[in-house]
Image 1 (cartoon, rainbow, N blue to C red):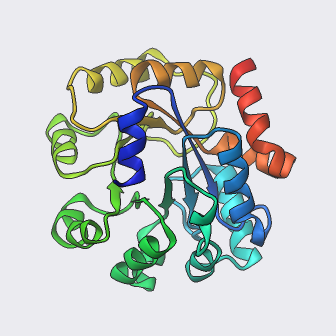
Image 2: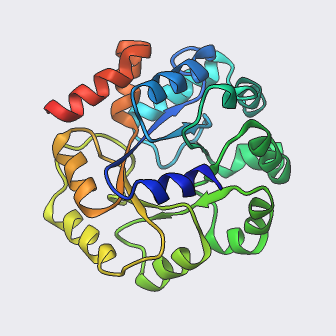
Length: 256
């Protein structure tokens, strides 16, 4: 069974996923950071593919991606770093990145490399849904990769249901239409959006991302979905604490 499916089968609530860019803060940190997250008890990890024009990312992740690229990170190098990942890593791992680097690498070759490394799913925020259905889904399915799609407060109910019907793994529920970045709390408008999606009784579980950075936002995400995705906050701590960042993140999420 795909590890993402297995995770959600055995744990239906309070799932914590963490995002960080490959090759950050140092080029060879990709695997050590992954090990540190697993050791801290994180349920799911999203490794970012650094890109020069990350349109959905806020300043923290943009800066980290720029540094990773300057360090020499590339998709080819990332797959070589992950080649022996499954010797020690048992939690689900997702690659998250923009379409341009994936297309330059070649989508089928990308899927093949994902499977060889033991990657369980892929998030490509700028992949149009119609193109996904027509051209990408059949290839991803062949390699048992879960293609995770995003929804926002502006996504219509018919489109949400269409995404739910044609994807598996989970749905990435973006808290707002803004870029990534820490928020102190989720206002009533965001909470209403969470409740509206919850009332649709979708087939797929959902994880809330963008803005989860403290206890208040984490608990709001937990209350309205199967779990939360933390990105900018962890990347910030990674810069400051290095491989101790995972433990520091859990401390901050419980205390703040």
